Amino acid sequence: MNTKLILSSAIAGLVALSTAGGAAAAEEKKAEKEKCFGVAKKGQNDCGTAKHSCAGQASADSVAEEWKYVAKGSCEQMGGKLKVAAKDDMKPAGKTDAPKQAY
Image: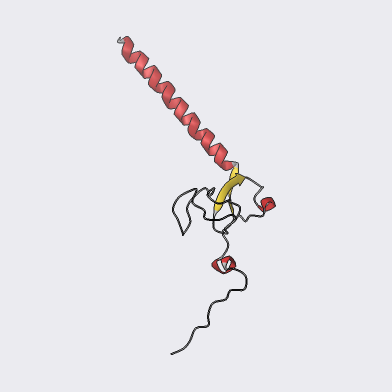
């Protein structure tokens, strides 16, 4: 038999096993985290929103729709929420919509 073929197959098998192990570790790490809305600092959000499409683009601290992965169970203790606030909850205090006029 060809020694190079056997050696190449063995190396390919080890690479495949290490890649599968890495994927499993990533899943375990993700399971220990949860999305926490309203706690991301400026430029430290983990993903996009309706206003932008990338991580690291939060324009201010603690914006209600910006989120960050945090340790599971710690979000509400940090003052965050597990779900994004409704649009009405995101309006600045004291602001109301202008009444609609009938024509």
